[in-house]
Image 1: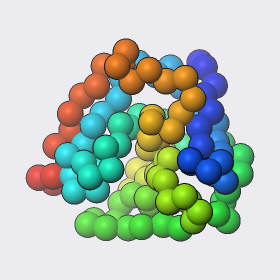
Image 2: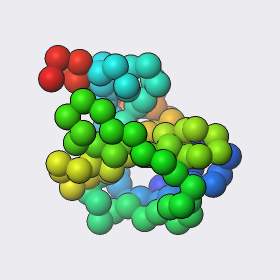
Image 3: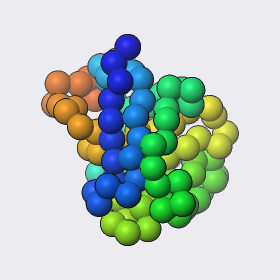
Length: 113
């Protein structure tokens, strides 16, 4: 398994995670669609927050099953934490060296849930 690093735009929030990135999802819910998120879900135990725990705020909406975390300085959501499920949703646009066009990207219909 490969270790990847990611961050928010200003670098206040940094993290690393272990995964073989071969696929991703794009969700059409009102939140993901407007932000253009491309997501990979990984188990909680494969994620390590390196900095910025105190540099974030959270946003909950709809069924409140995901903690959408945003940097207080730059406003970027580089990852989110599942509440109803033990996974981290990584915004692949914030991960170094990921070529999204080389991943199998599957649309997810979050709008109608």
